[in-house]
Image 1 (cartoon, rainbow, N blue to C red):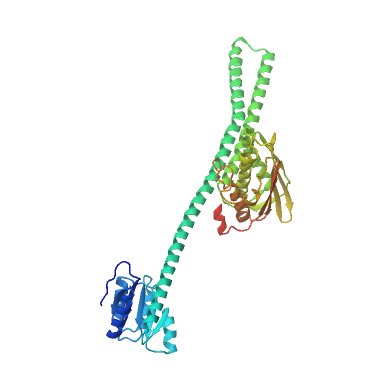
Image 2: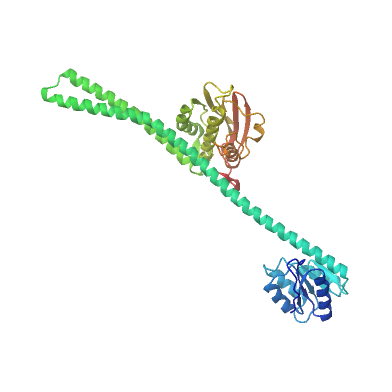
Length: 418
């Protein structure tokens, strides 16, 4: 095997496989003078060895050779993943159509007939090297694009997870604050009862009047009633939060009553709303049993509430900001679906903002928000709950209208957005 050296600015590296020395020399000189790095192989065995040792950019391959012919060499090249992309141009003195068919079936990209025409050899060589380089560049770009999309998908999933955890964290903080009142009242009642009991039993050494006993009994009953009422309130709040927390951190499907789910969400969201000077009203219709994904629905309501608190009611310099923020959730049957509306009396969307409301990273407060809230809502409603969502807004009124099937479709590939 001979190899002509070329500098790093060569037009490309070509392996010429030809068993006729004169033809091999002619092609090598022609291509070398045109700026190509040329490697020579006089038979099929050496051609395969040379290609495996260092893959060229193009192979000019004679069909009729002793030993392994060109068809077999081409088939072996195409069977090797490391060599299969190298374009092969067959060299043949034959004009037989069957040879061309066999050549293309073996994986060749073109034919050059003998005797060689210099202009034709150079034109076909240049065209196929440029085409191969373009295909390689495209493959590299596609691979880079795939990696970028995977990285974006991972980053997006992490942001969505962070949004869910942030929403859950806000619920935890709100519920913890809300629990302070019934637990504080219970501690106060228990302390008062303990002091009253200590005083009462201390006075028994000197005798107890009937009136004192009756007063102690009345005080004890009042304290225990207060204790039970506040402990029941705390227990109910914890139970609501526990179910909401389980739903928000789970993607499990289950059957549930919509009004019960929304009422539980309202209780857990109430502390955050009160802290912002807003209130939540629920206009529920009973009997709306759903077989769906409560976690996704809870997250939708949490995101919409957070969006309202951040954007609708948090604009003190806006004349359109309401004196008292109010959110209303309405539910009604709609054939085999439910119509769920989330409406606030806030400032409304800015001019031109409605068209891009559900696009990712579309937020006027990117410093305080990821800009993914409504994008997440849209994906959950459409891709997980199997419904549709519409948005209408004007100063003093913003309404998200959702139509959700009572029986959600099975989750598809798009559910990874959840």
